[in-house]
Image 1 (cartoon, rainbow, N blue to C red):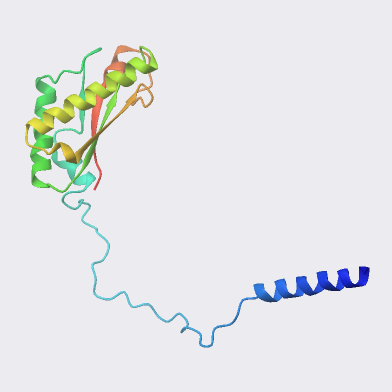
Image 2 (cartoon, helix red, strand yellow):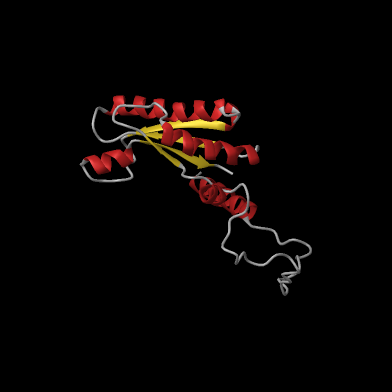
Length: 170
């Protein structure tokens, strides 16, 4: 009985191993040959970004960042100037989608700053929508105090961190 069991185990293992072997195809594909790069465009040496790209956006608007006062999310005169330049650019590229990130400084609770960042991002979104940019092209996200741009614990650093940043997705 033990010999029969051992023989069955060996036979099962042989079938399993034989089933796992890779079969060689009847015909092999051709080997690698010389690569012809063709007359296509070469590398971009102009240093300029293509129209509609994130780099083109940053070069052609006043700023991608709107700053806010302490505990505020209202759009002041400087923010309007920046967002007007963004809306003009976005009007030229109607298929471009953006995300507006809302940020806060390190003061306050995590929950408070997430809510404040959300209000800042939505204030910028609503302003752009009022200027003719379709709201369906704009998503918002709040990072609260989680992603500071300036790491100091002073008014100059806090002022830089109270912001809404427009990010081009295409």
